[in-house]
Image (cartoon, rainbow over all chains, first blue to last red; front, side, top):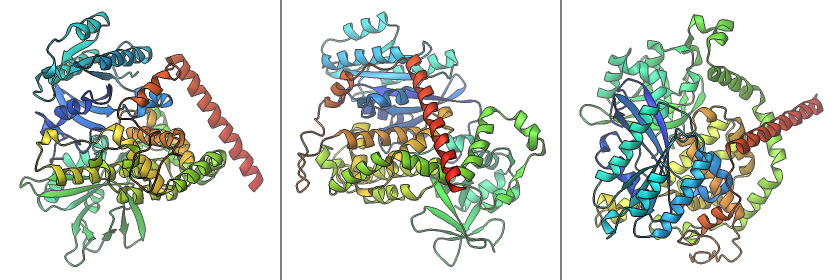
Length: 182
Length: 381
């Protein structure tokens, strides 16, 4: 940690962000892009992708993301509530080239909504956009129907869309100014 | 290594260094002195004095490795043990646990260490603000701080008794896990289908996990879990970078995810052979009172991951495993989503109301523990 990296002053808001999705859809790549990519100077930890932190300034406010990669833990039903407790945002990732992962993403979202309070932000991300010939339709329409933020991303070829999805989460959180969790 | 940014973000000692005592901080940075930061929970309500600051900035001894004197005085001698787990004050012979470590860089990009320690070197250095003493302090304090005070008081007076009762309650599960671990001696990450590049001996993590039995308070035990997981990620990171960084770009280097971390933690648990794992789980879950207000932080993450590893260990049938080879067990993990299917086939997730009912059940569990404690006290008197 560089000297004074956390001494920016101002109010610091903690956001627990859950990263959900099947194995192999690219959750970790997206998370690592976020913390290693264009924001490397503030990165708190990059040793593993299981737990990452990232502080950012959005609209004059510092937001610290605690990013939980939880797929392994969520195999155990009794741990689900523990995982979701206190989470304010969830990024649900699926692989655009594998519609089975989209079906599972839909399941994650339904379960999240069952537990969530309405203030929480859910982002649906279709990953591996660089590999898909035909895009959007299913994910986009599902997101519209369910009032989710939707984006397509390619952690492999570029960060633009990924950042956009994360930025949406930040601004949504800033506007809502709530600390309530799932 | 996972960093506990939370701790420094809210730490009054660290804040005072950056503001009121900036000159001392700058001197420490410039000369690469080691800064020991008492953790926030033991500084609540205390004024940070210059004396406290200068006693916790350590200069390396010119004579002996691992020995330090303070910025305040050349005669105050401190020793850091070889494994950097404890720092000892020579004069009063006390060991203070090191609960975290951060590396900072000065203007010349030279590194200096910041150790987060369990308490100040000398509690007499803490001066509590007059208005926050006594009854008026209790009235003014937010409920969290009041709870912290109660927690410290209770831990001081009831820890061993409470833990004893929990161990009695969870005795069967503890024994079953010990038996299972002893049968699985020699279990490697490869047996659990962890990718080859992450399948390493995790000796430092095992050694760290072995200390779990000896630690007394829930927070110490939680830091032990965090430290074990940190050591796993360090081992993996070092190995992967050594073997693959020449051929792959930074983005292509494989990274340890939750799906691999949990089975690796299972092998660490087996290697450590801790005697009271279930008791420790109950103890940490029910008696770390700050947990409710710090759901997102790395300690909680480590706890949930540890619990998942314990469940993995207990729920998995390892009978078809051949420990003499590195061949994965068919019943442990498929590369695809065996686990998720199992998860999705289980009962539906609980609603908020159900979870509130769970909380009430948990309170019942705590109340029954309390009864047991009174019974134990009665027997002793």
